[in-house]
Image (cartoon, rainbow, N blue to C red; front, side, top):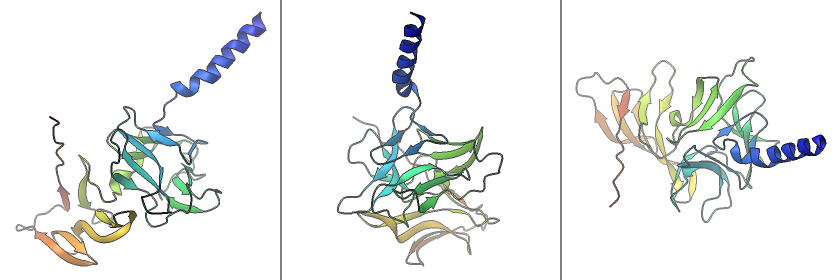
Length: 228
């Protein structure tokens, strides 16, 4: 009787636990493959592999989960398309990585230095803001909102860190159905106190700071239109 009870408890835990576990985070030994997604806690956003219409390439991206036929808001491997759905996981070095289907070629990584002590303890969380975060404990090591694609979401900003050279800037898609980097860039010109819109490397529209006091950060508010 005792053995039967233990068997039933073990079976129920095995069956029920996957439905109770969180689907918004990535932990060591877990991966996202074809037809699998991460979904933010209240299911606003989803992350997974997609192939644009009229394309044979595959990319890892984030999109609105509850809006059909919505635009992709962020793409990881824009410069390195895959021929088939790949694998999204935590690498041995603690970084977020996108691998090819055979797990032999790394086509993208978050490329953040992770200490040896943290390499087996990093996790990733897809937030309901659309932000993908790599973290260790309570510390954020990397965020997708610091490396935007072509879409600005509420709370995001354009900025330039003069010390590190890191920029938050937006780059258009190459074509309507091609997420690879296009010709248009919206960012801050590192050589001037200007917010600049670039076309093929040339300033197409530049807004100069008249007082010369620009702190290299521009915040653009994104207002959600009310329904009805």
